[in-house]
Amino acid sequence: MTSAGNPYAVDAGALAALAAGHHARSVRPLAARPVAGHLVKPYLLRAPGREATGADAESALRVAADHLATARLRGSLGLAVLLFHAGGDGDYVLVHTWIEGHMSDLAVFTGPAGEPAALRPGRSGLAPCVWEAAVLAHERDSFTRHVLDGGGAVGERLAAWSADVLEGEVR
Image (cartoon, rainbow, N blue to C red):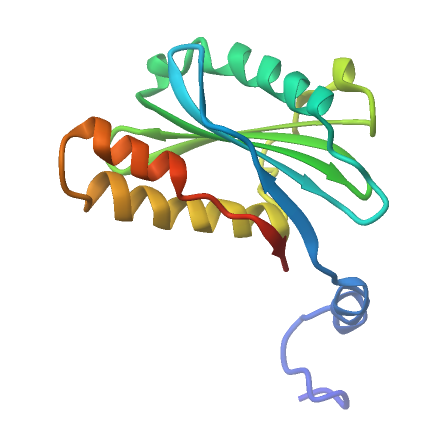
């Protein structure tokens, strides 16, 4: 063990800095809607001091529409979750699609804050941040509860899934 009680190659200083700066972020759902042949549940997520507006949502929906236009080729089942994240270091759009075989497809787009025309696919390997992952965890549970394990006709299951949203703060 090291003198700090850290037997692993853990960057204790970086973890302490992350913990010190960790905070809640607000998440707001928007009404589910059809986008490029998919039923999409959009969310706005924002860092303190940032806004996430209707114009941001429209920009994210355009990015999602372009991505979802070819999603059936990747096995999409027609359901997607869209996140617009006004982050502390820029803007992010995540398009999460349920695909065949109990799998999902995730696309992450990044760009400078407030410049929706500059959103581009994120680097290979980029994954959701802790706040985005909280929304996606809720959506995984909602999909399982209402669509996979739910009762009734498909339309009833989709209505229940669409109505089950996360709102408030995520940590």
